[in-house]
Image 1 (cartoon, rainbow, N blue to C red):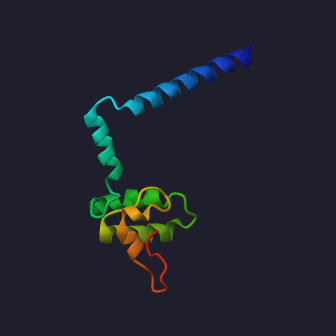
Image 2 (cartoon, rainbow, N blue to C red):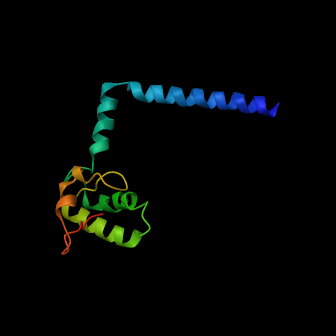
Image 3 (cartoon, rainbow, N blue to C red):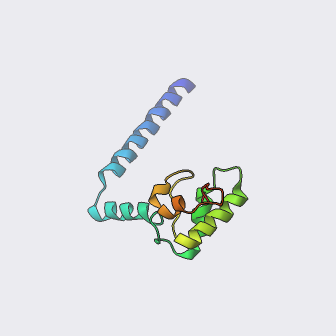
Length: 112
């Protein structure tokens, strides 16, 4: 009995997930799809952030590191200078050229 109930529940969840994926993939209206596209690039291009938006973007950027304090310090320093933070927790620096170009005295990357 419990096994059948579990299988039915699993099928129901799979159906819900597939419906959600299908609904998000179709993009109900052109303006909604355009809005989502703009939101994805917001803050990932140089100069597109406001200074007060640096802290939450850097929190997300540094969320996966073991060295949160230095990561936050340098991320906020870089964001204050170029007003952009690359998306994700690692890499993607090509979307914010300043992150690639600002180096330490030893030649390593300054921005996380």
